[in-house]
Image (cartoon, rainbow, N blue to C red; front, side, top):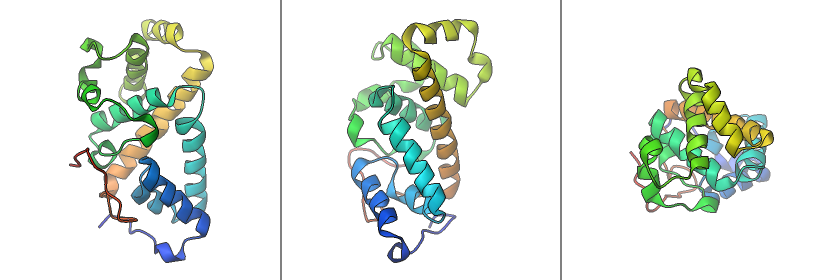
Length: 184
């Protein structure tokens, strides 16, 4: 069981249940993490609104944000988060295997590599945000894209670190399981 118990789904408001169902259908965020957020309706609403506006939609292509999200899962070693994929950004799983060595891989574009380097600076070491990195980022992204991507990376990194502490498992809410991705 998770370290924060799931709420009784029969007591959730219909709008909250719809958010959990959508999470089950779309793959990320997962219904288990959304159920935990449902303990505080304002948290569930705020997170879901930010997720929809910034991750699913927004100015940066969803697929690129999913690449950065998966990279964060691999670097923070969150098995729960690493085992989920956005159904709207179906990607090449083989590329994800090369994420930890993205700079040397030929499977990523220069724009993707710049976004992943930005992810390293935001998640792991702000000193990596050198003038050279910023020059590289400005070659590939507009200012609004950099703002959205930075916000998204920070949001997903913080959420993944928090979720890792909860000991969540796929399939514990709404009986859903993922196929094609191995969890822990």
